Length: 154
Image (cartoon, rainbow, N blue to C red):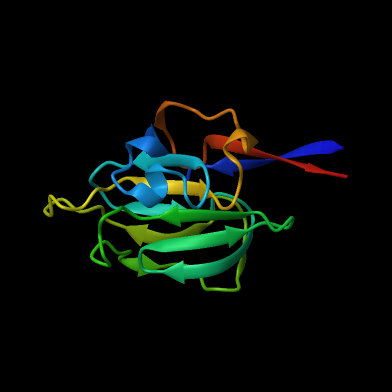
């Protein structure tokens, strides 16, 4: 069995947090998969593709990229938002093939609503927790290595 790793890049700059620090049980308990969250600064960010692939889902507050090997990465803009946290501009379209670091949308994290949390989860959908390698801590720049997703294959 050959192990292949998919490099997942930071879709925006900020402080890297474990998902357990995200105040939303779906992410904190890794119910949709393991990953990391990025807490961005309170300025407008261009949020980019964390992997190369096809943009399968795009909403004002989240998107899903599917790579050539069918592994999917979710990027979610803030939590506890109930639709109130949204991108200010969409820069890509569903079905579009995009390269890693290519812009997907622009987002200004909330400065005024204390019920919102600006953490941006980046999740390896349906992966097992032990599949993630090389996760970073501290501050990260957009486009820098966030984690690797290891999987078996032939």
